[in-house]
Image 1 (cartoon, rainbow over the protein chains, first blue to last red):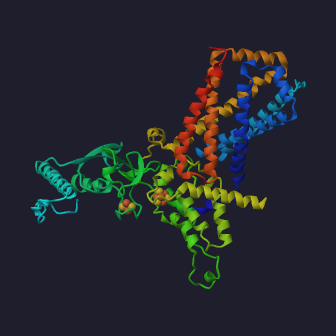
Image 2: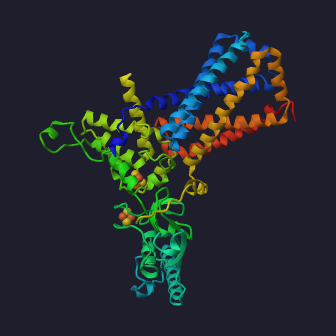
Image 3: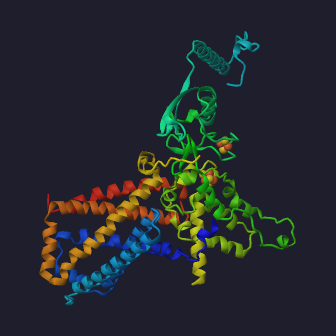
Length: 124
Length: 292
Length: 130
Ligand code: SF4
Ligand code: FES
């Protein structure tokens, strides 16, 4: 019945953002793998090396954006998967809150880590 | 060849044409081979060796003791050329078990009442040729719908989804409508919506969709296609289209489609469902961008 | 009819053999997606050793990389990431309404390509180990 669907919330923005972040992530994830497995072998990674890379503004900014987009894309994907399984009502709101908290924690810790890798002291 | 008379009854089929060309000889030989084949078949039939197709049919009946737990019954139906699964079911019902229950009506892929799960795929019984199927032919009721009896499922939820998109023309785009006159559609526009008008409400697509199964509120491919048919019709006014897009943009609307293509694969009317749903997603995004 | 029979979950998962290309693509995309988001959390957690000093960071990575099982897991991760990327490209095209008729072929192509890339990368990933 039409009434079931009459609330006026437009959800297209999540769909669009999922696609836009995807396009960005395709490039950056491939670059990340190339750089840290082929150009620099994973076993030879040192703090000094990471610091040298993270000290370049462009690289730092890319990595931070990588973190943000990946978090959104991943967590939104999980949320979508649960909606597809019919998640609804209270359970849906709880899951959404949990996912938001988890993302916030990840972003916070990720940013802290990124700053630490530039050599900044971020220990609490 | 199948429509020709048997050679023996044809005048001068093997005429005394001594100086025949090679092409004609070839033709004659083929005719002879055909006759031999036909005779062999007739002989085997008269000998009681009728070719049959094993039909494994899902049986369930809450009112009958032995059928409360679903089981499969096998019927051996005599094969005929051009036989469909529906024909075979009708034969099984008429000759073997009058309690075998299934829906059908038109027998020509028009009414949409006999969508079944045949050899692991949603198809119309009247459209599925036995000759194209592996044997035994396994016939089950449509998945993801509660079974009422044998092959009959409860379609109410599907119809409800169809109705929720207001599946009727609402006009309002032209003066002709206001004046109560005939509303003409351009050729191009008719072409655009042509495929989407073909839906026969069989529910095969909805049954094949893994998301529709998980999320009960998801409109589903058929309803979205129905909405597409009207939203893309130029004879409907802007406000009607807006209203339609509102329904489609719900969380349980177009966004739930995961482009699995199951619906497009099974639709008996070959409607490009996924394509239509994708177009509506882009349309919705464009609409929203305009508002930002 | 007052009663009806609900066949339950067997519906979906009992029929995996009958899945078609688009369905498999979806299943694999979701699966690899779950792995990747799980890895993102783990990755940040492991690298967070950097917060506690440069030598702990370097040593943790060295130690992990010296384990053969970690190397194999990394190959697995590569496979997962490559498939998710390639099928993701396929999905972006589908979203743009392009090549919908070839969606099954493009799925097989992304599978084959994933396999090729992973096999070609094994020496680099296991290098210095085996
Ligand atoms: S869209 Fe195709 S499969 Fe779905 S109900 Fe209509 S005719 Fe049947
Ligand atoms: S009997 Fe009408 S569609 Fe098959």
